[in-house]
Length: 181
Image (cartoon, rainbow, N blue to C red; front, side):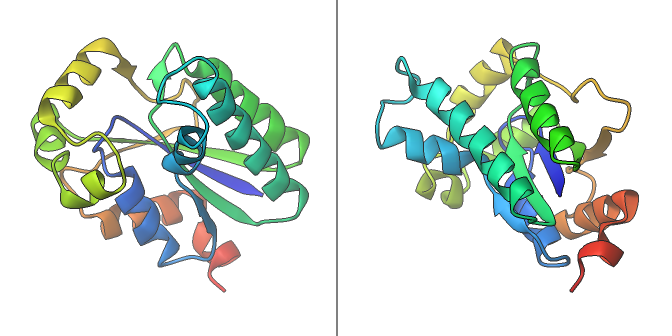
């Protein structure tokens, strides 16, 4: 299994790029908010136990996908350094134990562009962060950065379309030939 790990700050274009990519190659989407939305059925956002459940669901999902031969899973994640490194290392352990590959891609854009995007109606509908004020506070409090791995591809989503970004990822990691059926 290949786990394509699209990470970056809120409103960097992770889900938009994931959907564009999966329109070009065969694979499954495990959006960051799948686990968050599930945890919200049990806990208030951020309450004790919330993040533990989110992490557990993500790990179980990737392990099950790898165990059952899902060839490509594209996931989105707001990776903040250093807080999220242990979670990323857990994903690495799961994927490597199952003989798979973890493919990290850091998507980024300017603060101004993220603030412009954060108010999009689809973000409100999906219960994502939707105010520029909240976004700026989040960006000031967390260091959204590439995972510290030499194979991490870094792409600016402000200067290219989601489709062009997806094509670059597919080409870089050779996903088209293996997953285009």
